[in-house]
Length: 457
Ligand code: FAD
Ligand code: NA7
Image (cartoon, rainbow, N blue to C red; front, side, top):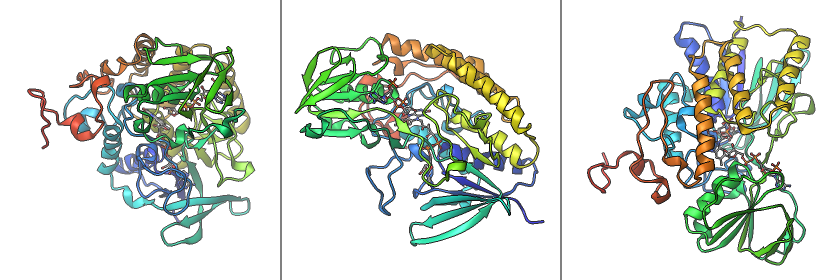
């Protein structure tokens, strides 16, 4: 009998988790299906693979990346550590709790390079369309080889959608914005704060992107940063130079008017108004339709598309947990595809999903959100052999992180946490975050502590 075929869409952290999960089974002596991963970019890493480009890439595909320069982890690394590949194993020494993007990218790659999985990934290949053939019970996947400009179709028994959901901007309209004389962009196209030095910046939104881009612009020399919220303010202790106001109502040239009657002139507007779950390669009957939230409907255990569980989604939730959550999902998806995890009936799955959806609706505070996703991870951990880790302790760290941000948004990244995988206490970084303008891996890792000179090895 020919081997079952698994198609994975995307080689970001979620898709790579799926590849790793199969490799882990293979190493334990199990026979695994034939796995092919499709990645439209030329390299793996998803969001962590920084691109200077905006708009479209060299083959005319929409740019996936929303990542920007000077991005430092927005949560403690101890909350996302792979439990089968620790930071100690990768870096061979303790590092700080909030590394910059290149360092986290290095860590993600370290684990995957240990396995010989690059050969399973077809880079520069966009998944253009998917059809489920009811007669053959197979997915027919239409693929574009971007480099050679060739379109072809392949069949798969299972399909894993790991294409991310922080890539297609949600772009609301504000009256008069078409006459604003300065730059207007969405966070998706923000590539770093350098252009905004000495400028008055308006940021719309009150979630992670608004907070982080606002603070980065402040750190890198913006004259002032105003954050405008629709529902709730971020509400931390803002330093001088950053302020929060209610919703933007309209523009009059370069003057923005807000709901509380206040107004101010700006040089640039950055819309940090979130993203759409967008799957242009999926037909209606296979497509998840959701807003960004902790428990999207339609997927059992947050993974299996209830109408057709051979179709799986990874990483589609709003995220406190990231890399370790993708792993727990990928391990369970793998076990289902290898036949060692049996799904309950469609009706039983619906009952379970409804239970989680009801719980999700009752959440009020950020702490509730952390607890909810913690319970979700625990549930997944109980169903697969992904190496157990102390999720309750991770939840405590998330809560400390939230408190730290409340207390001082400019210094929370100087705090340190203890690994639940190795017990190692993080190092204090050699330079306070507010003074550290260089986010390169070289500077981060190889600073000689005895003097201020860089030590390149
Ligand atoms: P992605 O990383 O988005 O990867 C999806 C992959 O699918 C991409 O490589 C894409 O090219 C590919 N793809 C998409 N469509 C197709 C197609 N049709 N055909 C082929 N390939 C396709 N998380 C943290 O833990 N800490 C942080 O500090 C943090 N900061 C963030 C900052 C920003 C600006 C953003 C946007 C996100 C941040 N995140 C952070 C969350 C981040 O999304 C996750 O860490 C992680 O990258 C999600 O992994 P993923 O594989 O699910 O999706
Ligand atoms: P989020 O977390 O989905 O937040 C979106 C924000 O945008 C949120 O504050 C929304 O306010 C706001 N929003 C959405 N539509 C509007 C309109 N029309 N007007 C004003 N404000 C609006 O997205 P982020 O980009 O912050 O974070 C996504 C990921 O990127 C995350 O993982 C980070 O690590 C990086 P609301 O509260 O709904 O009123």
